[in-house]
Structure formats: structure tokens, C-alpha cells
Image (cartoon, rainbow, N blue to C red; front, side, top):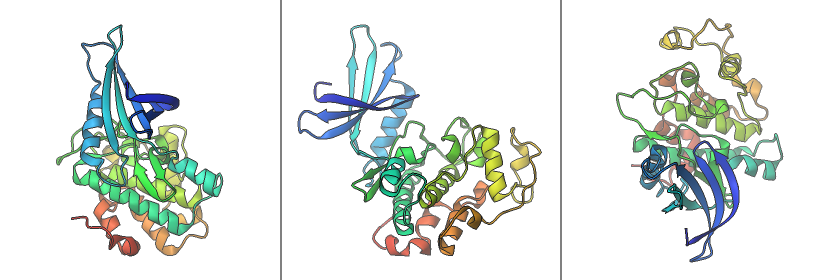
Length: 303
């Protein structure tokens, strides 16, 4: 760590601490994510190895935080510390919205649309490489100079393949978690990220999370009250999930009641992300190439 000077701690989670630091070779600010292993024998934690591997494959995309370096150090007691070095950005989407628009207030529709498109482009590059993020939320989306969005924190990401394997359901912060995960699905794929993007886009427009449960069951009830309770007709697999119960029957409600001063076009677009049945959600490429983003799409070559 001779090349980096830690300045302050930015955050701490289950997979390590993140520091603001300075690269002593050029004076640039960087972010250091520190992950610990308890001994020399255990080596690098598999979650850290996976995150480094994924970042190396996706960080060339301009809408994904850039991986700059990986450094390992060994203390006197034999513990190995792994530092992942990222570009430093001083604001995440949540704090950016509060500082620029006020707490509980959404951004203007055109700005939200621009950031949503950038988020989709970043996730398109991930999905194209067979990578699902699994923890998309405003706090894991960084903003560069108020203009460019950068997807960060790939600690819960993993590769997916067809057929989809069995994964843990302990992923994605509760408010942005797809209903199939909340219902105990062990097989899921890229639509879980699509659901999270829909929730994030809605929050950009309103300033508040769309679904706010304090537990998995409360989260499901919040979703069903707003969108309607699924049935075997609308979602044939739903009755087979291990956490499915006889939920109260709420009718499908138009999302317009959750929004004010949002265009009909934008409202309709949000709804294709928030379909309960993951097989009916829009795909990343389908969203990017939708006429809704016609103004932005012409500037990108996705193939």
C-alpha cells in the first residue's frame, strides 16, 4: 500500500470497508475497497476474487466504475489484506438527488431518463457477458460531475448461464429486490436486475422508494398492494415457490396513482420493468432500443 494514502472511511458492508484515498504517484483521489482473510491458508475470499474478475471484464464500459488496481498486503500476524482500487466519485445517486433536488423530491423527467438510459447501457454490457449484478440500488450507483452515471459494488454479482443455476436469495437490498427472490426462487436470471432498474427509475422520478417493506413479507405486500396480487394465470410458476402463501387478493392498480406529473409515456415504460412475472419483463436490449430512448440510442453502437 506504499502508493496509496488513506484519507477517510466512506462506508462499510458485509464484504469489506471502502476508503477515500490518494494515489501518491499522481495525486489523484481513488476509492479503496478492503477485504480481509483471516489467515495465509485461507487466501483471498472467493467473493473478492469474483468481484475482481467481474470488474476486469466490465469496467471498460463508461457507465461502470473503473477498476484501477488490485493490491495485497500481509500483516505481521499473517493476515492478508486485499485492496481493490477504483476511480473516486464523490456522490452516489441517492445523495446526488438529495443535494440537487431536495429530500423526497424527484429529478426532472429528462434527467431521470438520461440516467436510466446510462444505467441500462452499463447493465447491457454486464448481461451480454453473462453477469448479473444482484444488488442494484441508488447507493451503488455513482455520479460523475452531475452528468454521468457509474455502476459500482459488484460484491454480490455473479455469472449466469443457460440453464440458470440455483442461487442464494440473500441478494439485493430489500426495497429493490425482485418478487421471485422474495418468494424464495432458487433459480433466477437477468430479470432480477430489470426489476431493480424499474424501482430505481421510479425513485429518480419521485424522490422516494416505490416499495418500502421492513421484512420480506412486508416488501411483498407493498408490491402486491401497488401492482396487484399474482395468480396462476398471470404467473404460472408462482404457486410453486417455497415462500408462496395465500396472500390477500389485490387487483391490478394503475401505477399513475403512485406518481404525479409524469408523462403517460414514461409511466408505461416503468411498468414494463415492474411486471411480477420475470418472463414478461422487458429485456435490457429491448429497453435500450425502445422508442422511448430514441434520442439517446443513435449515439451508441451496441452490437
